[in-house]
Amino acid sequence: MTDVDLAAADHLLTTTRAVRRRLDLDRPVEPQVLLDCIRIAQQAPTGGNAQGWSFVVVTDPDKRAGLARLYREATGDRFHLAQQNAREQQTARVYGAAQYLNDVLDRVPVHIIPCLKGRVEGQPPGSVAGFYGSILPAVWSLQLALRARGLGSAWTTMHLYREAEAAALLGIPADVTQVALLPVAYYTGETFSPADRPPPETVTHWDSWGNQPG
Ligand SMILES: Cc1cc2nc3c(=O)[nH]c(=O)nc-3n(C[C@H](O)[C@H](O)[C@H](O)COP(=O)(O)O)c2cc1C
Image 1 (tube, protein in one colour):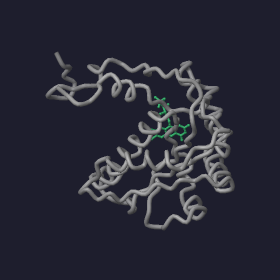
Image 2 (tube, rainbow, N blue to C red):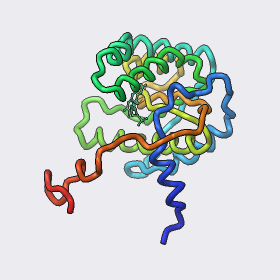
Image 3 (spheres, rainbow, N blue to C red):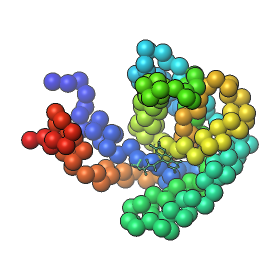
């Protein structure tokens, strides 16, 4: 027995995709719905229950334009070239969508930059894992909560190549690490399907590496 509606939970978990082309660029997002989603994200686990997270929500058009400029400086023509050189159709589609997002980023009504207090440069692997492990589950919870309310988002990291400039633009303190930039908007259309993934047995190692289950 479980108190979870398994069908609804599985549907949410398997159909929360990177939304780029279907972001409604014209519909504003109510601040309250964003706070509701951040409240849910705050339920995520953190190492030592530290809860050192912050979520910088950017709706100011000039600041979004500034972030989009930094993002584009970092991407250059990388997505365009990757799309042209892709061997598989699915990969070409992803890079085409990434290029589209790159081009319209300033017009996406909300950017959310999840942050974590601390810097991890030069730390040993365990510390790095503990650090990012204390924010990334919250980011995914945020994306799931947004999706459940009709809002799409996409995990992006390109602006982090210009992290210091983004920090200056938004007044983010020097001892705080930005971990992503989520463009957020209501999505258009209701058709979301699970992505193609290989059978779980092919990525599962039972008792020792290389040992398949069953
Ligand atoms: C760590 C990470 C970094 C990513 N960076 C970018 C990015 O900078 N720009 C972008 O358009 N998508 C980015 N993505 C989105 C991935 O391209 C996307 O998740 C992947 O293609 C799978 O698609 P799906 O999420 O719809 O299953 C990133 C995803 C992750 C997890």
